[in-house]
Image (cartoon, rainbow, N blue to C red; front, side):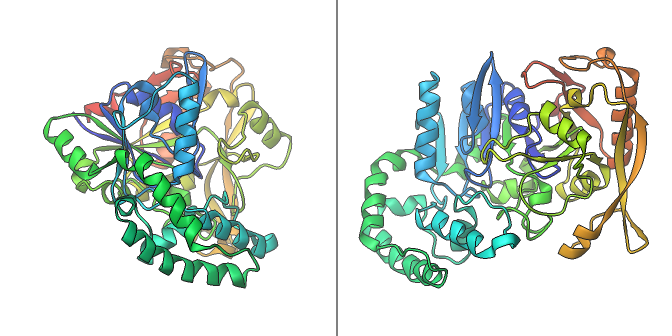
Length: 429
């Protein structure tokens, strides 16, 4: 049986949480491979809503959850999320959650720097969550990060904090922000050690053993391809590689073990924060999509910008992300609209483009080229088979498949886990 990787194909918030939860019932292990607690996955199980931002979604289903080395980990956020789940009746501990020993830690100085930079940018702010994700990744590639395994070595912590503070306090001083002292940070890390170290494990080895035993692994991505630090709408992106290929580097497995790649896409398009959005609707239709879709970020609480489905964007994500099949979510939000539009490309300076250009100003200047399709009057909400869908909805789905170059393998017709149309079992390979 194949493993499965789930990634977003737009700008995040496509409904990956529900899809991962649905797939987790068929998996043995669920692993996060990038991002941090800037991710937001909402799961509705038996009428109970779970909001996760760091933990692998599989823990709600009683599966083994792994956090890979490609994630940056805020210990306070981790323990707060565990406490919330405990209040909802779920136990999370080293018995069902393991964290890669080499996972970099987010310290209080990281969000402080994140927020200070955003404030300094003024109207040109990127729209980060202010949770320190970017600065933590900077420390990782700058070879000064404090990793989980370092908590077992007090001498190492002391040495690394000297280097870390030399760097961060210089930046904070230049931004006019308060500086950090070493001893409180060292005391904090030493106090965290006995709580956090029991979760530490060689995730790469766990996955190697799972593969040898023929166990099913689900790789859970955060954000989406268009927020990828290399391939997204830079600089309005996240600070990690969100494509499925990073599931290998972010966990310590070979690329051949990733398996089938599922790309999640809404039946329309949304985006949180700043950055280009060619199909954005600022009219009554855009407001309607936002209200029906309850478009508020799980992590940020900010209202998402809404627009028509951008097939050119998703086609680009399918190619870059190595997507084998799509999961189309929130089809029911489009119920009752008299007509629907799909972006098939862009116009820029009189030229037709089939993809977004890489440069920032060119992206912002792109004008969408639309194809118009008829809407449907009957409801798709709660449908669990293709036979329950209006003919116009099926035509809309088929046209999306043609334009993006990937088959729709699953459909989601409400937030409820069971309101899902599965056309193919992803774990069948």
